[in-house]
Structure formats: C-alpha cells, structure tokens
Image 1 (cartoon, rainbow, N blue to C red):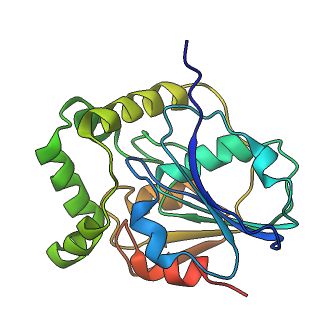
Image 2 (image 1 turned 60 degrees about the vertical axis):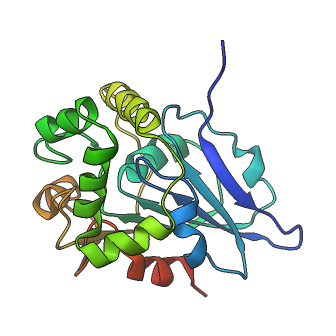
Length: 220
C-alpha cells in the first residue's frame, strides 16, 4: 500500500533560519504562488490534502516560522500543526475556517457535495471563475494554474470530506484572520461565525486574493 503524504514545494538555503510556511487551498500546487514568494527567506508551499501526513523534520533548521494558510488550507494547517512544538512567530488565516463543509461555518454542504460529485474540466473552470471574482483575475490565475487534473481534484475533495467529518477540533491558534468581503466560496458571514472572538481583519477581496499574497508573504 502506498502511504500518501501532503505535498510540499520547498526552496532551501542552508544559511537561512526563517521560513514562510504556506498552506494553499484545495486543488492547488505551488505554481499560482511562485511569483509572490519572497526571495529573502526559505518558503514551503503545502498542498494536496488527500492525506494530512506531514514530515516536520524538514522544519528543524528554522528558528522563525511564519504560517500563512488560505481556504481549505486553514483547516489542514490547523490539523497538521496542532501539538507540534514549532517556533511559529505568527499565524495568519485567509478566507478559510476549521470546517470545510458546514452550512453555518464553512462552505454550504450542498455546494461542497455538488462541486465534488459534478467536477470536470468545465465545472472546475466555473469554480475558479467564482474563486477569482472576475474574468481578468481568472485569466491571470490561469497563466500560472495548478498542473493537476479534475480527477485528481475530485479525489482530494472526497478525502477532505472524509477527514473533516471526524469529530476533532484542533487547538492550533491563529493570530490574525483575514476575511474577504467578496468571498463567494467561504461566505463572509460563515467565516465570521466560525471565528467569533478571533482577531478578524475584513479585507475588500475575493476568495483568491493576489494582492494579499504580496503583503503577507513579504514581511520584515
């Protein structure tokens, strides 16, 4: 039996002690984010949540880890990083919650299941159009689109549905929670309900927010 692990694209420089640890959303790989990653620190992009197995020995050299998670990556990061004693200096959640499929705190369950059951190249294009918010934004995203198939992404959604149905609430905490006011995937009202009491920062952006990547990936 093949043991699947979460995928990660790592750029490593032995002289660096700081790491940007980014958990991308469903259906992603490193390609949509490469142009935004900083050049002055190591970066790890995590994706493909058909498994939550994660080798944190790769993080041993670092003394300063900044965690940024987006969309379903917020759920994945929360599960993966709970009870790991890592030198996390700041944690930032963007347009996601601890509940990938939930009528009040995540993506509406009927929408989640409909996306999963009806996924093909045509419906994937429609999803990305809603994710980006405009034709122009979608065209830019498509220039650096993930190199994954619809069948691959359907399998990932199926595993996310199964894994997130487990009665487990992670204890990893988020310092800042960015909520896109125009998000059509994780609706803003559902995000607010999920993060009651958290440090919420409303932002005028769609679900996929390229302007935020520049701000959150490049920091002092």
